[in-house]
Image (cartoon, rainbow, N blue to C red; front, side):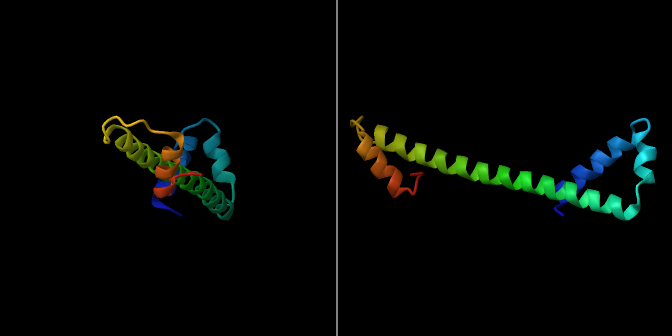
Length: 97
C-alpha cells in the first residue's frame, strides 16, 4: 500500500464516519473485511496513480519531441521543414511511430 493511497483511503473512511448512518454500518462490518476493503481500495487508487504516471511520462516525451521539432524549425534559419524531415527528427529522438 503506497502512502498516498493509504492517506486517501483514511480520508474517505473519515468522511464516511461523518455521514449519518454510515458510521454505524461501517462499524458493523467485520474488522478483517474492513481491512480487505481498504486494501482493495488502495490497489484501485495505486493502479489509477500508476496510469497517471505513465500518461505524464508519455506527455513529457511528446513535449520533448515538440521542443526538438521547434528547434529544428526555428533554429535553422526558418528552413522549410518537410514531413519527411520531421519524421526523421522524430525517429532520431525515439518519438512515437
